[in-house]
Length: 353
Image (cartoon, rainbow, N blue to C red):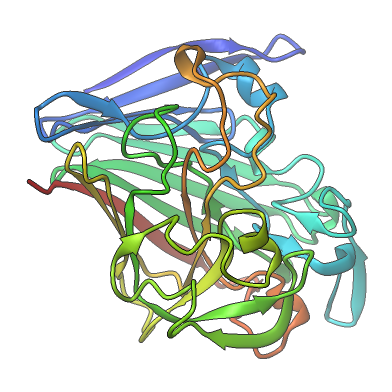
């Protein structure tokens, strides 16, 4: 089943809508055309009670005024680009600085702040919402007209699939993701420090104090970044001499083991109290794990008036490596005419009793 409703208005009078996808799996998702944002994701816990496992806001006003990219599609290039500069085909491009000296998550007005066109809805066993955004040549100083199609599908196994497809008419760079903030205890219900995380990654990108990759890699074995055996997310907070851990949390790019371009399980998250377990599957080579360390606790409240709190959620941003265009040894983020960017991430849910 797919239902549509008004989600508010932009300053220019444009009406924003949200679409709720539901099926017999017990999972339902509400997605807004503004930013392609996952507004709600309801999952039944071990007692059969629905839990909204994604943080967000009650209407579009919250997404317009609050920070954090809650639940939104991120592009053209997610994560950070060092010094707001990159060179492509011998031409240097300068980007908007929105993260100190760096550019982050698409620049001044990224894909998270755009109204996406709904080009198709498909009802049935796996209800589907298809969104499109055409980014014109040199928008945010990225060359080429980039046509991006994102397909949200509620899978019959109980979860949500996100397929990212894009083509360009000029050489450009691209790195798309979704910035959903997950708390399996429910939006605004405490922190994720005691939730159990597993990540299939032996290495992370080494980064400096601005969270910019140095070009080197860190073997995580025996460090606070080692989640090859499941452990509580907050167990090793404040134990490593790096900016993110010093601030009480993670903001790191984990490089998925044995990457071969096929969809595979790369991470899991489990809430011990209600039994909800999330599985993250993707054919992307990396996942940025961010535990809402820099959230503004004075910002507007979440859905239902619940306050924002540090470590209130964890993001699994499947992607290529950050700042890849400035590191020849990193995963490729260049897209050329005639090529197709095509990646999928799936979040499925189980009950652990």
